[in-house]
Image (cartoon, rainbow, N blue to C red; front, side, top):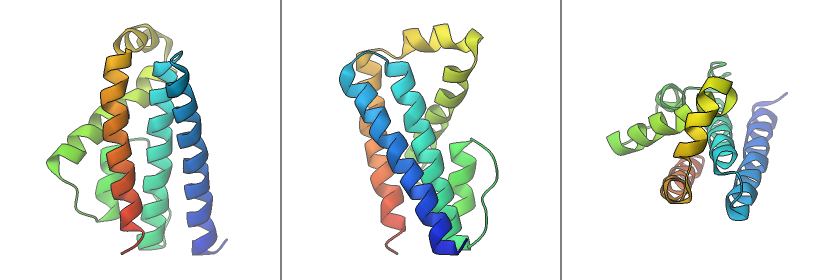
Length: 131
């Protein structure tokens, strides 16, 4: 695959996960899984950005902060703190012992806040493709 094809693959996969997270969020039924798919979407977008900027495969990791740092782009401390919190959605939604606590944490109010932050970060990441 060419560099453009790899980037396109990651971005399209990210977009699908983002759309699914929005459907879950808007349904008001499973905020925990909506946040999990936010994480997955941002992870794939960061991997697309890494490949776009470095023409190299990113690490096979799920840590959004580490993936962001590996792109070489500037991120504010606030963005990195938000990405750190969003990284926890991956772990919390996957493992049974975390699911119950995460389900309780993922209230509408909490999810509203974190969706707004995720939208802001997603826009930032997309802007880096335009550089």
